[in-house]
Length: 153
Image (tube, rainbow, N blue to C red):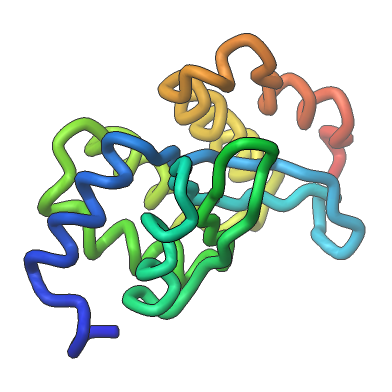
């Protein structure tokens, strides 16, 4: 991607994510993980017209476009790709700087002990507070994990 994603493209993508995107944390049950949960960051951009998004997977080399009832979403969930996209847009983002910092910290935090998972869950809760649509249906991830993970783990 480095050759094709010039500065003007990175600035445009940052503006698109600032205006019509979301940076979200998802904590979901996962049997193969030590504490039975995994934490993922997702970047999503929503547009009315699919044509407004088709350049993103080509330019960034990641993500997929999905149709909703009346809109289209470009979504990327691969954690290394998310981290790469966040680092590309960080210098140009104006309104999502705090979200980029929290999301980056979540991805870079290794989860070795229960306290690490709880710390990441608290960061996920903090990140979800920025997303307007998440406010009413937001889960308290830290409480959810605390209730289901034994302190002896």
